[in-house]
Image (cartoon, rainbow, N blue to C red; front, top):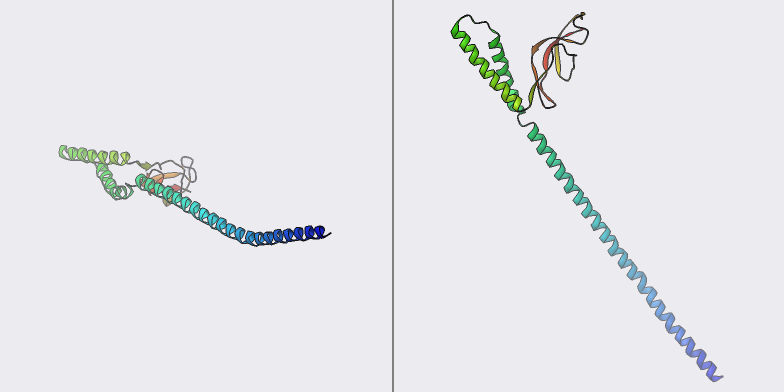
Length: 182
């Protein structure tokens, strides 16, 4: 019996030791898990910040590339706008009638200068906006006067061009000033 009691006491003591160890482990486990969870949350937060920063850098790079392409595409816009009045004046000079040989040679020189300017603008993709006989488009044409529609010129048709319009690629540099049938 004594052996039985000793055996029970030994088992009870072992159980108490195991319970104490389990209690210690269970106390440490939540702390460790909490610390692990904190570290994992911090890692997740830093990874999110990294991914966001990387995406922002990619966006900035794309935006800068697009801006550079736009600047390159429209780089000659300001110069073309400044040359258009000179082209208008040269065209008016060519419209005058000359009667002598000296005037004809001067007119020929003006024509050569005008052709050179037109060629340079064409090289830079500056084009004249077609207007005469076209359907009126407020994005391309500026109506300065209207006339009654006829069979030859139905409503919303450009009857006459008062000043040529020009565009650079898809951007209007100057709309055509036109008379429109109404």
